[in-house]
Image (cartoon, rainbow, N blue to C red):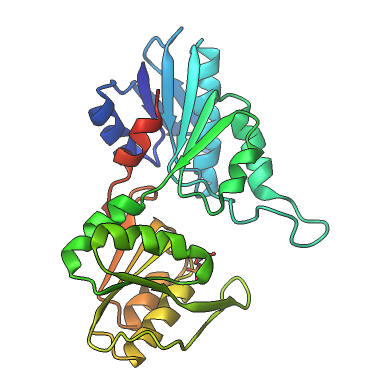
Length: 283
Ligand code: R5P
């Protein structure tokens, strides 16, 4: 059995290798002068179960995953488990308007071509797992994030909208604090409205937990509202820190005390590791 890491997911692959005591395969990956990607698996993986680990965001990482899967198939791997720490395109999970692509379905179709099992972390919605024509499972990084937040003496953990309340509830059980949600309305891809809601946060330490931080609009508006209502400290956390554009600046300027993300996507804010949640699903 081998772990094969794509270039986007080295820390997750390294941790999985450590937890499961499975060696990492040696690979060569490079870009041709025209930027096309090249991969080669150096170890003999014929008849082996291989676990390929690669986040599919941004797009070049998706191509790399597809090439790694093909390389494993061509080399005669017996079983291919694909671990996708962050599955991009999951938010376009239905036809919102006629003529669109169902992106989550389109990408799942490609990944399913050379995969026996797909495992991902906190997919935006669980039903996207049905788009894979192979067996697909998910796990959650909420316990790891909550364990990190435990050190922050939180009085309250919030979901940015009612739909995400179960995430805040799960975290609150681990942290040992109250939980609630904010009233969010999405206007468009970059604009959200957070309605004032009386949360009794006066002089309290508050955490917010979400699956994704993209433009940072949701978190920035939430932090501002909480600070207006007298919150002492506000910590924002997410599984997948995309931090598109000036997200970090927006969040920081709104008075955030700390930004916490996991290593499903590498960034300066990837303080929480997710491998412990993924490992039990690999068999
Ligand atoms: C939406 O349903 C997600 O859970 C996140 O709240 C959203 O993706 C965050 O986006 P942004 O950072 O652009 O506000």
